[in-house]
Structures are given as structure tokens and as C-alpha cells.
Length: 126
Image 1 (cartoon, rainbow, N blue to C red):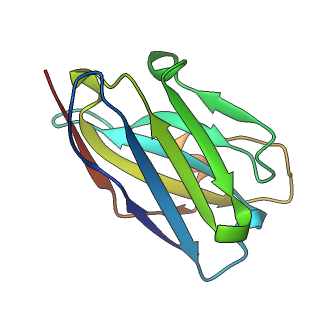
Image 2 (image 1 turned 180 degrees about the vertical axis):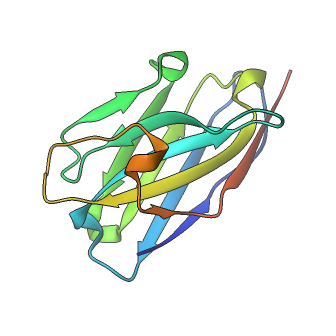
């Protein structure tokens, strides 16, 4: 499966963005998905994950209550809705997908994922 992330940009603190990750090449409903981010000089870190069915989600503590991950399998797309953005959210955001037979499993480690998108830059100004 090929992943194409989009929706990044420059936003002021307190603002919102919606990232999208469009998948092609396979039936996206057969994949769990996640978002990771990498700030300059830092390691890539987990942000959010969603199960194949969309029934389960999981977030890193720093984004709980501000970010929402969702998916539309009919459109082969996973979204990351980001509200109340903070300068600390500035990073390149990457989507990832994992082929799985388990409809409700979620994955939050990089090594779990098989496919990665190219990244989209989010910059939050103070």
C-alpha cells in the first residue's frame, strides 16, 4: 500500500489543522493505521493509532483531548484532527499502516508498521 500524507502547514498557537493520509494499492480496511511525528533534533514519536475497523483509538498523553484520529475506509483515508495546537506540536507528521487480520488491534510502536507515508510539516507559531 502507498501512503500520501497532506494537510500540514503554518498555524498560530491555539489553531487547528486536519491531516489526511490517503492510501492506494490495497484495501485500506485491512490495515491498522497510526500517526507519528518527528521534531528537529528529536527521535520520531508516536502520536495516535486507530484499528482497522475504527472502533479503537489510542493517543500519546501529550495530545489527548486535543487530537482525534479517525478513518473513512470507503475513501481509503485516515485523518488526524488537531485542535488547540501548541508550539511543541511543531514537527513532520508521518502516517503509517500495518496489515492485520485483527479488526480491533491498535499499534503504537514504529516497528509494528509495515508502510509509511512521506511526512507533512506542521509548524505552530507562538
